[in-house]
Length: 155
Image (cartoon, rainbow, N blue to C red; front, side, top):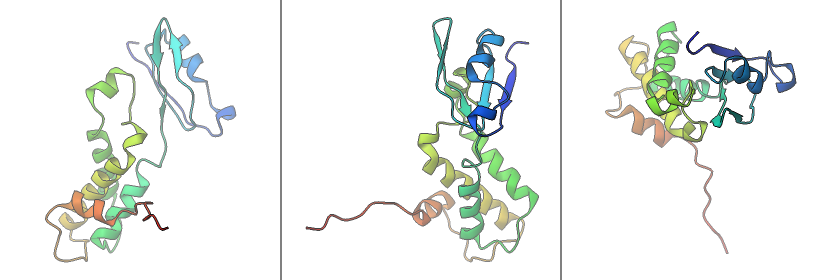
């Protein structure tokens, strides 16, 4: 196998099907590895491998926001597919080259805004959206709906 995909999704970490170190050792450093729990980076043959975390925190915040901001009257399977496609579109070649199957979680707000926009667009396309008119820029609309935990300084 050129690049085996190993998804050790059980939680907590102590219950995972295998560790990151086991996956990279077994695959001679070729594995594309993601887990349901965080694992530390692993060095194998002088290369640092950063395990991906396959977590619903990538999809559901943006999915929920897309449903709410479009006023979708129900959820359709195609909206879930739109969310998955939006997530996949944000994985760069650089991410793939590092063996990652998800974009960095540090970009979760941007990721969620794009997922929300895709979900809302699909709701409008399917005639399930009740919020009218449709925003011209769904990404900006999603960003404007997000909570920012920033507070003014008071004396």
